[in-house]
Length: 71
Image (tube, rainbow, N blue to C red; front, side, top):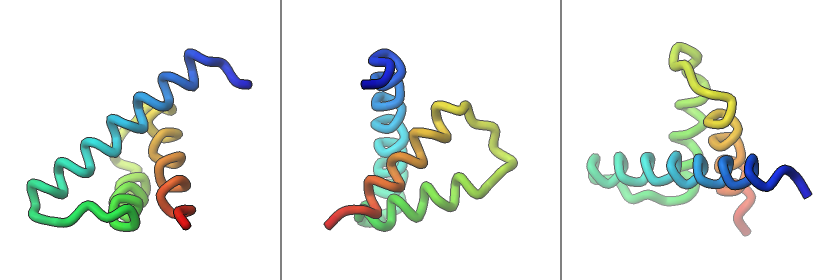
């Protein structure tokens, strides 16, 4: 298994990223469906003008993968 503290930090960052998107969508009156959340994160990651930590980038990528591989 991987480094437990890194895994925990990644998980916490994934939760923070998803929570932020869901709350922003709610404020805009949009329903936070999993595919829409993944799209918002993809669009955000494509914006290279925003400086993000490697942890945040990895968390966003992991969330996108998790949300788009839902059965």
